[in-house]
Image (cartoon, rainbow, N blue to C red):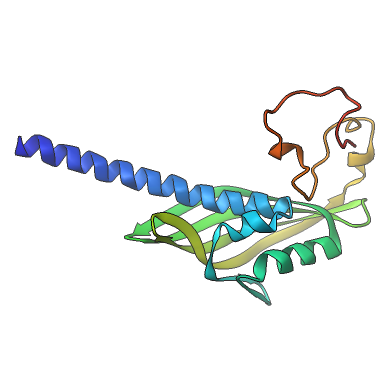
Length: 187
């Protein structure tokens, strides 16, 4: 019985570790999605109230971070897309140290140019009262690029849904149902 109990406890510990990793990755991805929708409430839900975000020369502290980050994006861009790719996660009790690769697309206000940055988020998350949230983020930039974005205005893209910086974005709709081509905000 003791051997079976030890095996069950080991399995439970393994499952807790997997659950923690999934909750941590979900928090990081949810924060990126929230910035791409300008959703200050959802951004804040990913951070502890004493959290700090370091984006180059800009240091953002909670609770001001969501709106200051959104204002910076609105001042320069029509849309953004933060894509989390490789993700490493080291859990030490109720603290997690993560390195997440990010490819950020930035659609300039002019509507004819797009830039992208490739870098990493170096995050420390903490689990408080059973919930994982970000405490510290440091952002690296590894490389950047610029390109012509006029294709988005072409016939090939005409009719596609357009991402919106609000809760009016189609991703918030429930249930998700198809719509006639004239419905919704489209290119």
